[in-house]
Structure formats: structure tokens, C-alpha cells
Length: 218
Figure 1: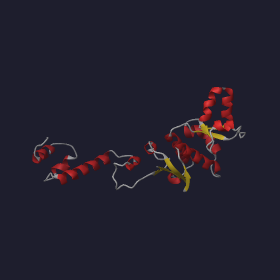
Figure 2: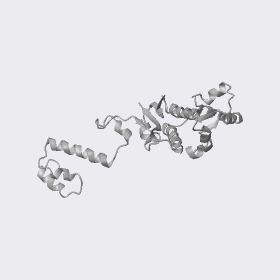
Figure 3: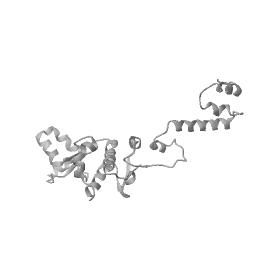
Figure 4: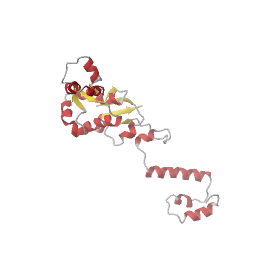
């Protein structure tokens, strides 16, 4: 309708089925103030219809009145939105703070907590990992991994896919002639969503509250 008068535009909008037309035809004057109000209403309606994930609301172009949110739980549905482009700052387990520079640190830090806990068993995770993680090789015994390499040297690359809970690559354990063959090593050659998702699966298995484990991003 280009530069036609406001009265003609109102008449045209009166025959339209678009919801936003009501915000126009109810106006008597279409000045700068009315245009700005209409613009604000349009944005509100759009966001009510197409809601943004919580993580996106922390972006610079979001409403400044919304408080900055940088903490989330591994059991949230929108993990990929939180993790994409973000790095961890710290992890809270049962209100105790743990440093974490990478998402691998987060996963291994949680596993370390599990290993040190008297109430939860990593052996249980090992026995039920296919159900929990959809894979049977997330947690393996160091001895089994070493045997794979002995049988087929082509498996040596797998030594760099696994770390002990204290952060040592399986390859490093091999070089140190580690004798603790019953020690578990953990698959860490995965993306952030997979690593954090495993924590969420463990939390749900043991019925942890959502805020029992919290992650803060930078």
C-alpha cells in the first residue's frame, strides 16, 4: 500500500485476517509514537509464537531487562543450545564447586566425584552403560584396552580416546607401565553434548534433583 493515506490503509487492513491488523485499525493517529508501539507489539507477538531457548536469551540482542543466565543443568532438554560456542567455567556438585576448563574436564570431574562417593558405584555404570549411554565402550577396564592393542597394534590410536578419571590418557598409563589393570578409563573423544548428556543420564538413573549438578558457562 506504499505511501497511501492512513485511512485507506486502515480500510484495507479491515478486510485482512492477520492478527496484527487490529493493532493498526484501532489507532486514530499513525505517528512515530504509534509506529514504535506497534513495532514493540509485533516483536512481543513474534517471541510468544516462536519462543527462544533460554541459552539464546543471553545474547547481546536480547532484552536487557532479562537477567543474565549462565547456569544450567545436564538434564535440560536444550543442551545443544547451551553448549554451542560456550566453554565451561565451573561445575557445582551438591553445592560444591569444581573447576572445569573443557567439557572433558566436566565429564571426568563428575566421574571422579562418582568414584570417590560412598553412595554411588562406577561398577554399576560399567555394567549398565549400554542402557545408559547407548554404547558398551564408554567405560572400559584399562587391562581390556591394553589387550586390544596387544592383539592388534592398529588399536593403539584408541589409547588417545580414553582417559583415567584423574585426567591421564590411557597412552600415558601405558608409558608409565601402569600396573593397576582393573582401573577404569573413560571415552572422552566425543562432543560436548554427548559428554554432558552422559552426566544427565547418570543423574536421571540415580534420581538426582535437577540442581544437584549445575554447570556454569563463560
